[in-house]
Image 1 (spheres, rainbow, N blue to C red):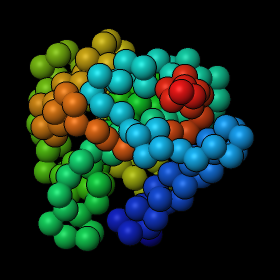
Image 2: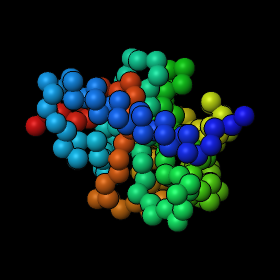
Image 3: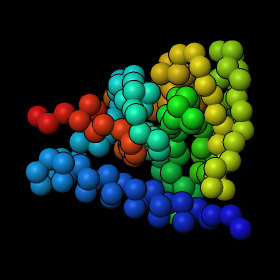
Image 4: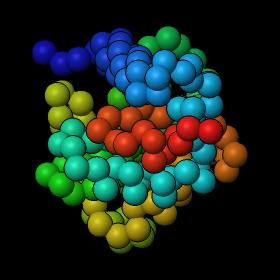
Length: 171
C-alpha cells in the first residue's frame, strides 16, 4: 500500500509548519519574514555544508522547485541533500510529475559527470541517490539545467536536523 501524492504533500506541509514553529520558538517568538525559509541557487553550498556538518540522525534539506502545476495532484518538484548512515548525498525524489518527466535528464547529467546513480526507496518513496564528488556543483547544475531555475529565483526549503541559525542568521 503506497503513499499517494496528496499524503506526501500533506506530510511536507506538516514538516514545513513544524520547521516554522521550531524556528519561531528558538527566536523568542519573533515572526519569520517570508524570505527566511527561501534560498537561491547561490545558497546551495551553505545548505550542503549545513547538512553535511549536522550531528543529528535524521537530516535533510529539500529544495522546493518553483513550478506551475497543470493539475492539483502534479506534486511539487523537489531535490534534496540528505544524510544516510552519516554520508551526504543528493537525492532526486521520484514523486512529482515534473521529477518523473525529467528523470532521464538528471541521470544523463549525473552520469556525464562520472557519478553512479543508485535507485532507492524509503517509506514507499522512490528516489535516485548520488554520493561523493562535488555534490554542490551537481545540485546547482540540476537546479539550473534540469529544472530551469534561474540564479536569482527563490525556492522554498524544508529543513530537518539542520542548524537553522547557520542558514538563516538573525538580522
